[in-house]
Amino acid sequence: MQKIPLTVNGADLLKQELQELKSVARPAVIEAIAEARSHGDLSENAEYEAAKEKQGFIEGRIAEIEHKLSLAHIIDPKETNADGKVVFGATVKMQDLETEEVVSYQIVGEDEADIKQAKIFVGSPIARALIGKEEGDVAEVQAPSGVREYEILEVFYI
Image (cartoon, rainbow, N blue to C red; front, side, top):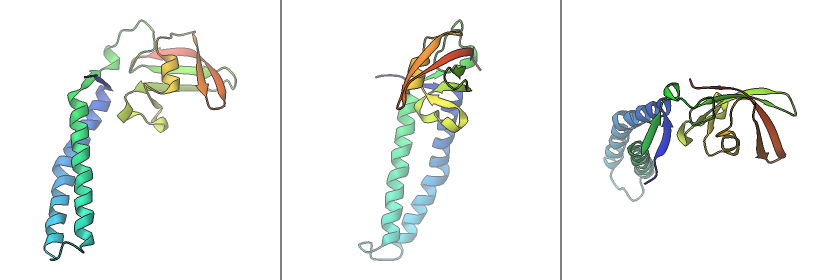
């Protein structure tokens, strides 16, 4: 089986979500199902159907998180020694050579990717173009509007 890369923070977020699902969401939906059952005829009980559907979602998400954590390869960017190369967990400060805009992104796992927090998925086109590069290198990224070039200004392991 293939390992799933996660940063320490990403693994902690999944563990917190799992705890929340098991200790809050699961008991709440079990209670909702019991309440709906008490109303009698289940064949026409919308509350019961909605609660069962929600239970299915919660149980599916619990199984998914447990599976991901069992296959997790947890990487602490602070302990990474990649000699200035862009690797999983690294934060990259770069400049768009066309617009001269400077941006920073951290390369993370799928579950923790959030562009609003400047965290990009390791499998995204921009991350794939950056992996293995170092300060001063130019990464070419295939974007919908065409090829974009980014100069890597700094690489951090934070």
